[in-house]
Length: 247
Ligand code: HPA
Image (cartoon, protein in one colour):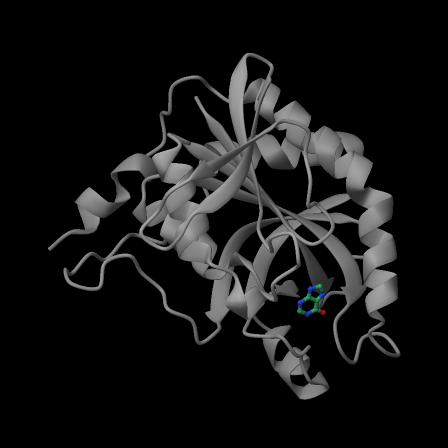
């Protein structure tokens, strides 16, 4: 199985050969390398100059993964915690999400394809990722709410959102949906970089960066452990999502 890694804030580089993959949404530069007898394709989500979450070319990134033959994506990101017990510096592996963005959502603009989202993360990869995360760090699981950004949330927004979700971030959506539409398994590894608005004095971007830098080695090691254990053949239903959702 070919594996894709999408690097979030702080994970901009991996060692390997730079390749360019064409897509209908523009060319995408990826890094290719081999690890544990697997072919790995890496894309820094935000590009070299750190495009903000609402300007990321999610469509090009996911189509490039598909065109490269990737069957499973592990994506990293930073998130804010909305729960006291989920502390900055811990790892969060989401098992569901809520979309609060105003972003374009689908590859299927001209045909009715309603993909099933009752299990938005690949159950097999997500489980392996959570097990690996727990071996190496304090790790939690739960619901990720996606906000539009680039501004951070208000206190009132967080006091509403925390009733329904555990962490807040800006990049999971539409990436996760586009991957499923292309039949690619997807799981997300989040670094909790702060408490969300109102739950800590103020949000300091330098502090978010510091936490990410401190966690980088652990994140790479969790990904490595996960790549080792990924099955060669996919037994989940992710690859059939579009066909099953087509009217
Ligand atoms: N809100 C939204 N996105 C984030 C946060 C946050 O508090 N922390 C890291 N990404």
